[in-house]
Image (cartoon, rainbow over all chains, first blue to last red):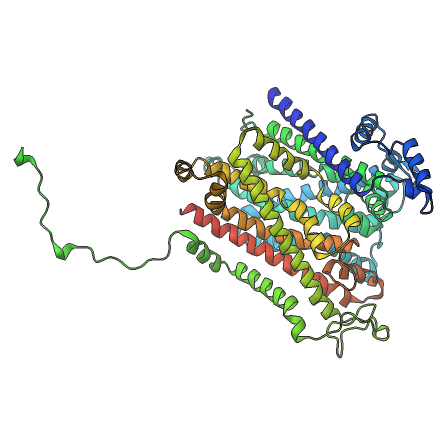
Length: 315
Length: 306
């Protein structure tokens, strides 16, 4: 087990290095230096070169990469010249809000998807199962922003129950309490996540239901409720562990589309604004953080699955 | 010794088998086709796809609408005379825009799926066949690129390299090839141990011939299913890009961009700018997913009855 962990960890480090190289090279190719942005379009070439040299943007790609990675490992994620703050400060303002939105949606989605999947497997091919499958299929085929737009159009603009944009408050406590603004984004996001999870949960529950130990439990005379709760639930939940692990990146890197449509001041909206402003240090740090979180999420999912399922033999 | 030689039974013409009925086809691609055609949802999906292809590419020949000149006096008019789906904020007919947008979305979808599959299948096949450290390196590269959030990189590259059908296809194709590479490598690893590969090698086949003539045709089932899902994903990705403002712009159209324009007028209640486009996107992606699911089930049957 420890040998596996060490090897997995080593592979993750290699992948992280590869990600940092790729991301840095990509952004360096697209945007070599912010000198023009800072000094203005009429600055002379000499001024630009001087600025580059004093701020560490001259030199080969490799030396710049090395300085950047060195900075990241010391907590310096770069400096945004458009926003005139360090990138880390920009992230610090917003990560809690992104965590709340995506976190609560994921928790709700898991709480809904697990019973739903079990229900679909037990009452297979019934009306309820078919309705749920068709709905999940429709949400799966729909681009996210379409659902948000329809929800806003129906519930916020026509029926006027909820607010048409998410809470603009900077304090997470106020955001949590502001149900009028936050209900639509949370519910829509939850629906979309459930649509994705329910396919896996349904097929996993169906596979588990066909196992021999379920038959044995029923033959023993165990009440159906206990069969479902004690045997089916625990075994069918295993794919959910992987899915939750894979959704860790979204927790901290924010959900770009939700935050853009609902104007929620989270990390996703920060990314979108930086795209519009062509604020490349933020983009670089953001992509890097997102990729690191993806690798971490995979690692956590793998380890959690191994802990939860003793049948998995680690070689 | 002669007495212990068993003798053959006398030849009895009457008992010779006359052959049976020709039964249903049990193996091969025909079996897969039959399974596929049995699936009603798949036929519906194919029908919807065919409809949208015809709608986008053949439609403009029957429905003449000027999508290039603006006509501000007729801007934002609801569906009515002359404009079955109304006009947008510049007075251009929405139905005509939908057809042109469909052309771009479908083209980008199919082109990026093809780029993805060609690159991915080649990468996976070579990695699987050569094996060893080479295989590990190639697959680590795939892992690295898979870890990078797709939307972020696509957006960053789209900002810089702008929006034409070809550039968007290349950008989306840049990420589409990763999953086919993994799938094909898995298939190749399974196929590698088969006898026909050993036989071909013994006959002196070079690696390229092994890949092109033996491995890839046998991995085709996995590849076909994957291509279908890639088309669906690519059409969604184009819609996302267009909605966020990085799709095609006037005088070209794509569905995401149309939707993005429409949302500006949501408060005014101009539903014809939003719902028709949304419906087109949802139906097309759903159709691709239906066809992909049905193909996967049908090709599974074929594999099982090999």
